[in-house]
Length: 197
Image (cartoon, rainbow, N blue to C red; front, side):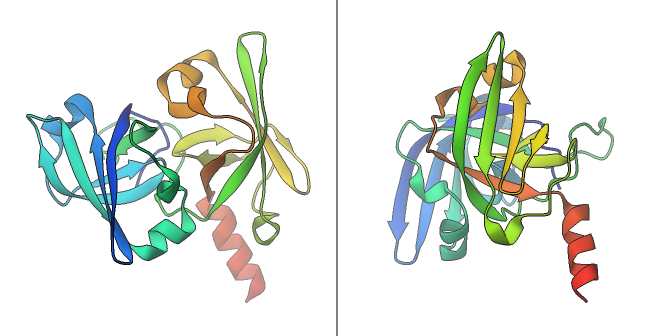
């Protein structure tokens, strides 16, 4: 379980295809000294398991399943790409953000990424099968970042990004047309499933 509050960013060292899976190696900086093998880390909002850490090299290695590559944007990563990182939440810590499982529902396309004074407006297109899971002022997780849905239409959601979030996450590397991982609010998904049944 995560909160969507990005702890730090890392950079991709390699993404090696291994048959129908892949091995991802990330420079995680000083976070490497705090990780243990088998621990969960959200990488751009996708819950991955640390398979090997190297404190001296400040790296962590993750094995990606074909399903992960199909559902997320992790397969698009290149050497040097910046990723958002968050360790699983600690029970004794303050709980900010919202409940994030690290289970990516889909990828979304950036329609608008524009600066307005000190802030930025991020608008993404919601896949037809996922529409209705977002409410105005509700929570949405984009690339592992807990954001508030400020403007909701039938097919899009827009979030306003403050300077702090812009600076400490990978959002400043994004461009219109790019893809982001999205996880919709868990409560909305449960309500939808209950209504279907």
